[in-house]
Length: 135
Image 1 (tube, rainbow, N blue to C red):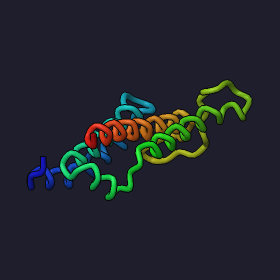
Image 2 (image 1 turned 30 degrees about the vertical axis):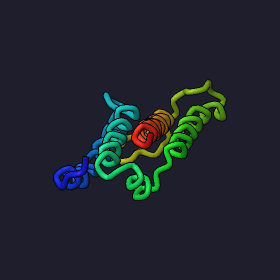
Image 3 (image 1 turned 90 degrees about the vertical axis):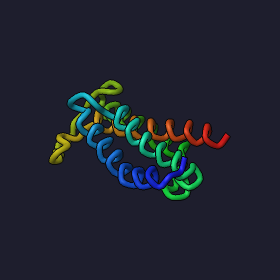
């Protein structure tokens, strides 16, 4: 449904959806939240944009290929799972790096896995959205 109110609202709200989803992603690896809920929130913002402006416009504007997004997310998650294996530890062992970022905290494989989940969830929801809205 295209109305001036919806178009204006989505233009203003999409950056807020993305910013809050990133907040949930980075907060969630130490507290409630994380990659799944953050990815859902980001995907909801893009879903609403696709419903207001159309899927073709959203795909063209953001150069979105959901299958590619899913592949990138799975690759990031897989790398985070395999890093401990190269250190002689069991799969999915949490490793933290010496680097600490303000507002995020210590970087490590759990955060990397959460980022992979975040990207996969965005890709899956957008893939479902685009398939259902086109056909």
